[in-house]
Structures are given as structure tokens and as C-alpha cells.
Image (cartoon, rainbow, N blue to C red; front, side, top):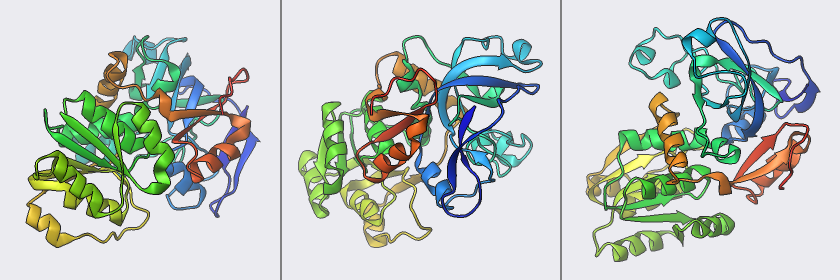
Length: 352
């Protein structure tokens, strides 16, 4: 079968190459992949901005159908059987014994080797994954929505730690996939008012957000903070969600928050150091929560939100066949696609 692989540790070196089909080890399952999402991490892996272990097949966001089960899986996971649609947490090879694993945070285990960078991932017709990381997709959730379960779970994990203020005002800064999903989940979670801010260069993404019923505003510096205060009788947002990873986004969030408000940080910066208006943060007396990756519970919660119709991430996805992977990466770089989904099936239905 063909797989999109990072072949060498140097910059780029992605190629579509032939690889053998995987076999299910004991406790593992082999899936037939329906869609694999391209994450910002995949772009960083391409250019060595994120650790990886080449040669390795990319793809840690995926949905598919169970093809085969390894020894013991049928007994320990009776819901899994050939033909069942699933999504999978990307927390493979977590040790299970470190202080994080024993606290229920395998997603942060230092030994973890996720599909797509540590072990072979899902940008191929098939992938092998540990069965205990799989979640059954409800019938009401279509494949394109299911393919965005992982980024939705990242957002839900953040709100598990910093809950949506019921009836309150939430400002999300950064209209990428995480930002738009953060706004959709905040609305579903009971926020009274949700605002999504982005730069002028994100016009297309803001228009997509507006088509989903979100209040989208252009981030031109202090204008966003002023607008939020106007919307809240001078108070400011109860919760600000930073989803851009940029210094400008951080500053906008801090200036738009109310005093004794809260900030949830989901955006991943390109560098370790980000300039912060520290005095503004102190003046606001903010509670700040940093969240990364996804908890076990956030996956079932994300699927439940989709199944109930409260959140539908499908409009964010644009589908490309596996052989057009270069076009998919180019669309993300040009910001003409919010989320690119790779379809490795021979009978794929092209939408891009």
C-alpha cells in the first residue's frame, strides 16, 4: 500500500512510498482509514520543528473502520469488531507507570510515541494502533466530523480544566481549527455570548465561522478589546481563549479579559519565547490555564457533542486524495483550507 512518509530527519523529505500492510499485534487493532487530518504538528514534523523518528508514516488524527483485531482484543474490548467505525487517541506506547500515567494523564507521558511521529500513522490505507485507545463513533456522526475528533478533544480537554462560564462572555482569539472549535464548543457548553477574533489575513476563516453562526470580528489590535468591553458594558470577557500562539493574540486576550477573569491557552507558539504584557495580566488578576493534548474523557465527550448535534466540525474539513497530499499541505500554508483531510481510499470522493 502507499503511505506518506517522512523518510529522513532533514528538512522536508516527505514521499508517497510503498509499505507493507500492518499486522495486529496482541492488544492492537488494524484500521482501514477513512480520513486522516493534517495537523500543525505534521507541518512541523515536515520541517523538523517537532521530534520524529523517521522513516515514519505521518498522521495522528484519523477515523476509520476496524479491519482486524490482535490477540485478546475481542475479550478486553467487546465493542470492537471488524466493520465498527472508530477514532483513536494518539497516545501510543505511554508507559503506564510514571506519575503522569498513574494520574490518568497518559497524553503527557514522556515515553509516549504517537502515530505519525513515533510510530507509523494514518496517512495510508491502514494503520495499527493500541485497541485501548479506540473510541466507537456513534451512528449519528459522519466520517468527516469524526475525523476532527482529535482537535475537538483538545478543546474539550481545555474546558475540562477551565470550564465555560454559563451565560458568560467567551472571546476566542485565532480562527484556525482549534479556535473555531473552541468557539463552537463554548457555545455548546452554555456561554451566553461567544466572539471569535482573527487577523485581516484570516478573512476566509472568519467568514466560515460566521456561516456557522459565530460572531466573528477582525483583530486589529486594541479594537477587539474595546469591542468586547462595549459588548459587556465595560466589564470585559469572562473567559478568553488564546488559540493563535502569537504574541499579538496573547496581548489581545489579556486586554479583553475582565478583572478576576480567566484565560485558557490552547495556541501552540512557533518559538519558546512569546512577549507578554505582564502588567496588563497582573492588573486583570487573571487565572491562566495552559492546556495541551487530550484527556481520555474528552474523546467520548467530543463524540457525544457531535452525536447530539451540539457541535458539527465537518464544515471545517476539505478532503484531498492521498496522491494529492502536496496540494493539501499547500492549501494549509496558503490558508485556503481550515483543515485538510487526507482520504487514502481507492474509491475516494474528491472535494478539493
